[in-house]
Image 1 (cartoon, helix red, strand yellow):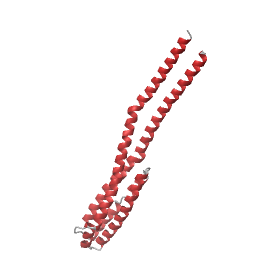
Image 2 (cartoon, one colour):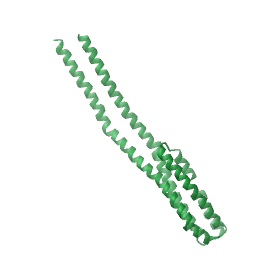
Image 3 (tube, helix red, strand yellow):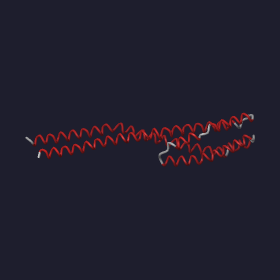
Image 4 (cartoon, one colour):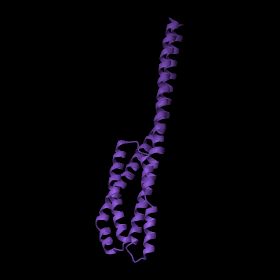
Length: 207
């Protein structure tokens, strides 16, 4: 009878120990996965989208400068500055950090309006190169401005998405740090209490 009770105690305690180990592993895995997505997804996405938006506005300002009185050589320098400051590499980097369908859908929508805007910039700079400044001014203030607004709005959606995801994932990490020790400690205490109860019962039963 005593051996049978010991076997029951050992089985129950083993099951609880496995539950503790499993809960600990799950908490660590969740923390690791969330931290990994922050490093390989959220932070690169924020950096790429943020730098791209900054460069977009800088290029827009440079293009506006082209409408001021300049020599042909000076306008050529401004055009070269815009061409050398394109956002292609930044958006490629952003694409490499996409892991969620919503993020990919937002990115594809942004690339569509970006393509439309880039076509407009080529048209604008072609007018500047042949010194059709009045036409370039009208185009810059009208159609190209609307295309730029669409582009910046789409880029902002990507940036805001990563801000939101970063906040959510950061909260998950904080929650895991806050509650995981209590959960594991509680389960360990449960193992101790059950072991003590079974031990006392066995000791009392053998007297």
